[in-house]
Image 1 (tube, rainbow, N blue to C red):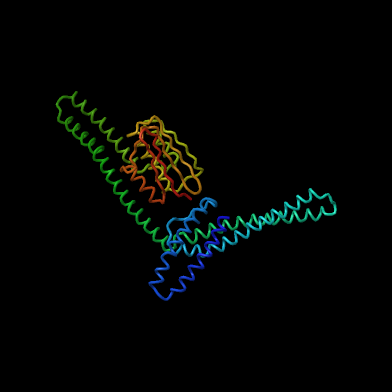
Image 2 (tube, rainbow, N blue to C red; image 1 turned 30 degrees about the vertical axis):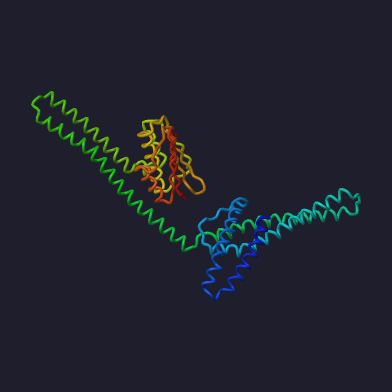
Length: 365
């Protein structure tokens, strides 16, 4: 009924606006003076229509639209409102016609009128069925019209998409540069320092005249070489895990869980292997989130959940640590850029005191 009443207002407003604009169409300044309040009123009525569609029909439209789009929408929408009023009136007539004859049949004890009463009642109920289908069709048309008229135009959509791709490309370049700096820092602070210590130990062993001291230095050099090899493997593992190519995403995530110093439970809900770019981003999201939790949050457990829903892959990493994670930090910010490069979305919830929940959604075929 709200839609039918709004249709009357929209029809009257459209006719009135058309007449006013017709009178001043030849004069630019008066035309602009008339058009300004017309467009403002059209936007207000359109906002009421958007609220009606959202509450009653669960139709959500973009809040970004021009005033001219609102006027065009109202000029088209009143016809649907009138159609909806006709359908509602037909439903009332069908319901009243069918139920009234059934009621009379219960009151009148005349066998000769029984057949007529039954046929008339069935006809009324059939009319009611048709009107219900008409109501559903009108509701569907309402949603399509609103999305069509109030949504972004094709050119605007292309411009928005170009801006998103430009931003994501720049983010990918920044992420690659950050990754290179991190690798350089890991090599300089870890592997390089151990190799320097290894060279010093070997040099002292060669210069030593005491066999026992030389043997001790060689043992220390051997231990330092083992530590350097472990650091090198750690750096290589963080650059890209070979397990992801050899055994798939599930095995790579189980490797992350095994290497963590706290218990990590992996809940893998995918039936198949995702595409390699998606699997790579998922792996790094889990790896970075687990590393950050272990390093900064002191959790007792971490839960990693992987699943898919409505064409999107969803990964979440939750820990019971002390919380307070900074979403704008270098690690999580780099993950957000990785996810955005695939048109995904990363969300971090980490109130002080915990728990911390890192969630990423990625489009997945």
